[in-house]
Each structure stands twice: as C-alpha cells, then as structure tokens.
Image (cartoon, rainbow, N blue to C red):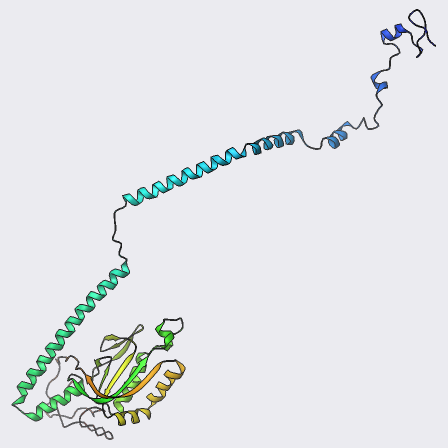
Length: 334
C-alpha cells in the first residue's frame, strides 16, 4: 500500500504530489509500443501510399471533368450543327450567284448535230440521184438517133461500172455479227464481220459470174472499195452496219455452184463455226440494184491506134470465162 496526500502511498508506489508534478507518469514513448521498422519511414511511406501526390491530384481533376462531360458534348454538337448550317448556306449562295449554263450535255448536242448533218447528206444524195437520172435520160435521148450500137455499148459499160440501175434474178449472201458482238461484250471484236470477209466473198462472186453486186444498197463498180475505219465498214466511202446484205444479179444455179467451189466457201464456214457469225445464202427472183453516181474523167484521151484495153474480168461484156478476152478494141482510159 502507498500513502495518500498526507504522506500515504498510492497503489502504484508514487505519491499524489508526484502525480501532480508528472513525476512517475508514463511517457508517450513508454505508453506506445515501438515498431520494429520505425527507422524505415521512407520505405513505409512508399508501401502505404504508392500513388504520387501529383498523380492523385490529376486523377481527382479528371474525375471532375468526367462529371462535367455531358455539358461539353452538347457544346460539340451545337458547334457541328452551326458549321453544317453555315456550309449549306455557302453552297446555296454560290449556286444562286453562279450564272445559268445550258443543261444539255455535250453528248446530246453531238447527237443532234450528227442527226442534222445526216439529214443534209441524205437530201444531197437524193438530189444527186435525180441529177444522175436526168443525165442518163439526156444521154439516151442524144444517142437514140445516132447509133443504136453505140447506145447499147454505153449501157453495157454503165452496167459494168455500176452506174446503170439493173434488176433481175440472183442470190443474196447475208453476213451478221455474232450475238456477243451485237451486245458489245468484251473480247468479241473478232466476232464482227470485217472488210476482208466482204472482200473475199465479193471477189468470189465476181469470179462465179456475177453481173452486178451491191452491199447494203451500195453498188459496186470498177472503182469501188471496201475498207474499215475503226469498227465501221465503208463501201464507196459510205458506212454500213450489220447485217451485211450482198445482193448479186446473175444465174442463181451457176452462182451457188461456182461459189461453193471457191475458197470463199471455206472462209464462210470458218466464220460460221469459229466466230459464230451468221451466214445465209438464198435465191432471189427479182433484185433491183440502183446505180452509183458517175465520176467525171479529166484525163481520158482517145488513142490514135485504138489499142486494146486490159483483158476483162468476170462480169465484163465479152468475157468468155476462159481466155479473158475483152470486148472489141476501144479507147484506152488512163
């Protein structure tokens, strides 16, 4: 036991006066147990608080900005809408201030011009045909009372040159581009009828005894030509298109028989089987072939000794089919 204030001792062995002075009271260090890692305060701070104070502050600000994001999103939408309205107004203003231009495309204008030029060409061609018919009539009237033999010979030469219209029985050879070529499919260019095909057939028909030939209405004569210009076939410098109708006046039986014996028959077979080009040969009871426009000769002069011209070919009056002897001596044309 300890006494009290009058000298008695307290239970802990200290007097009351000592307690008042703090003598004998336990110190904070004594009251708190000492940690074994107290000397390692830096390591404890790293382990207890791994985030840097600056990063923590940045994270708090980012969290606050996320909370205010809806308001900034509405501002972005408003800015985009304003820009769209301004752009639409600028386009409308430019369109209204722009001078009005013609709406027709260049292609439509070109098609219209081609139609006009074609109509003009058809009118001129019809006028030439009327003039040609008038010239032939005047020529027959002028030679009628002079010499019938001269008139007959002139008519024969007109048939050979293709200037005199003719009609009679014969055959028709028709060549048509393949179905793929007509649809302009890629790689179908070889399936079109070309100038060489028409040339082979026409030459074979002349050799088979044809008296007159026309391709799509274009009469062939001694100065006729069949050529290609791009994908267009030109006969007498006039464009023609598929189907190509070759009209031939002559003996139908002889023409078909002799044509089948020429190399043109093999050529037509190749066109039909390899390139899918349609080939049709048929007889015709009455064909009418128009005459082509006559060309003026500026270099023809009579020969003093009236030398013979070159041997005539098939279709020329006087050709006997074997020796190629031409008609009687006549003037030579240079």
